[in-house]
Figure (spheres, rainbow, N blue to C red):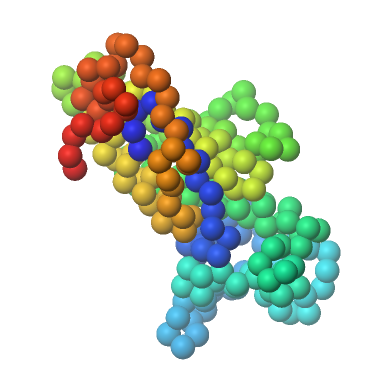
Length: 216
């Protein structure tokens, strides 16, 4: 990511990381099973709090990181049945949250809850991940990156000035989120640049056009 940027992460419904999914299922109280089939790691979700009887069949299956939904949940091949969308939106929200925590905490960020946030129909979670620069000559050591998780699991981030060393760590975490979501953000479409305040024009990682100047 860059200084003064807003990014949107759209999840590919056909891709899920099993370890992150497990944490999401535990939080939601969904019944699941992990096993090995023909040498492949399989993750099966049997209960998503649905009202319909699945007769012992899975609701969701992940083989490696590839997702299969039970045919009961499908409409026109890939579109989730309208009546059950909310159940899968719930797992997407928790999956997004656990993904952010896992990847940003792995590179040294800490969670800062937004105590004033009130959940709505469109926005389910809002918080910040915080890190501090270790560069001796850096005058603004604290970095806060805001995250909003939408009702369907879409992630929207917002950043301002980021010191050089923290910048590299944030880039690594953002790339890992892309991988866990099975998508790739595009410049100008999912990555939007903000106007850089005059006082930051000459900072190492910010310049006209918000291009990254350092190579790494």
